[in-house]
Length: 110
Image 1 (cartoon, rainbow, N blue to C red):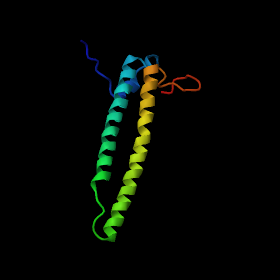
Image 2 (tube, one colour; image 1 turned 30 degrees about the horizontal axis):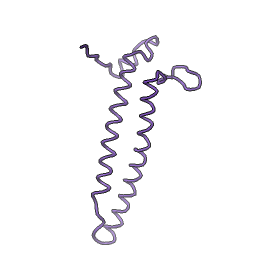
Image 3 (tube, helix red, strand yellow; image 1 turned 90 degrees about the vertical axis):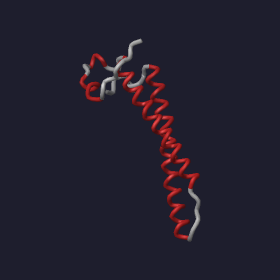
Image 4 (tube, rainbow, N blue to C red; image 1 turned 60 degrees about the vertical axis):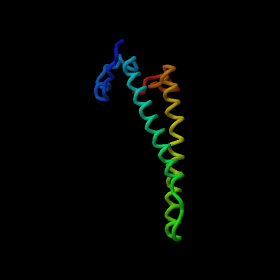
């Protein structure tokens, strides 16, 4: 079994145009997207736990501070939850051979 060593971003950028979206580059982007997806899922889980974990106790100022914290957490959770389908769509385009190309013209975008 052969293990492919993925290039770093600088090595990827140094590749000739003729190597555009070859198997090495596709593997690089697949790994980057999967890593980002995993980090995002973990952070979404942390946000949900933080939202569920706190209770608004104490005086009015404490309750108001907790409500503001919750508002910000929900906003962040919403923003990150919207990012997940975009990563999944990018992974699907990568699988279909469409990643890295303009949807309208089919020209390479990298």
